Image 1 (tube, rainbow, N blue to C red):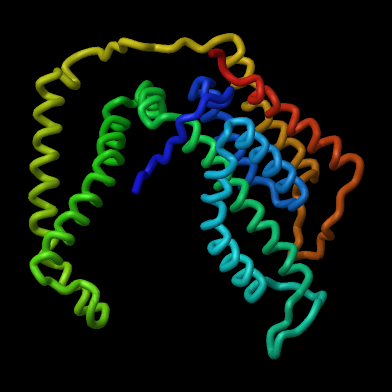
Image 2: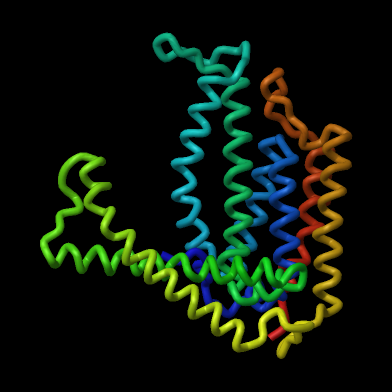
Length: 289
């Protein structure tokens, strides 16, 4: 199990600096929270999937979204059952499926898919070390701790698996009985797992102390400056956010489905969507070789 399943590909998206990609994903995520119109959300989702294709990570992104379908299905059913509305589409026994609830549930699912797909771009195209190196400029001690914790997680999971396999080889049953019996059988794993984790943590702490961590101003062997193209990208991605907020205030992308707003689109909506997407298009310029 890898917390950061980075995909090592040679693409223009991979060659980009991490900072423009992080701003792109942050802007997309905030817009997914702000916008409630399904048409707007699907347009942005289509853009994100096009970026995934340009970055040669479309297949793993679709694989990640495959697991999101289960969450989306639960969210859709929950929204249909508990949301209000007046226009009944059909009935299933005592349950009335209403148009307003279906539109609202569709909007919530579109938000979820847009947010997950956006973070998939960051996960699959930015190396964890590069991400942590970028974030460390804002608070390197906190980010270093986070980096160590995320790298320790798969190690601890592997230790747990190895200990469990060793105990199975000695005849210990882990998969028989009810849930309480299974939990009791796995309890002996905790002690060696904790001891291994503490030993590893002490080794990391000693290594950091030997290298003078926190002793003075931190220097970097490789500090990649932002190019003019990167700055233009960041400015464009940041501009997309206030533009989206302004249009939302004016009523574009703001669909109150629960109170009867229809699923529709007009010429003005198309123009706003085109401008919003245009502000994200610089990402296709990619990075230098």
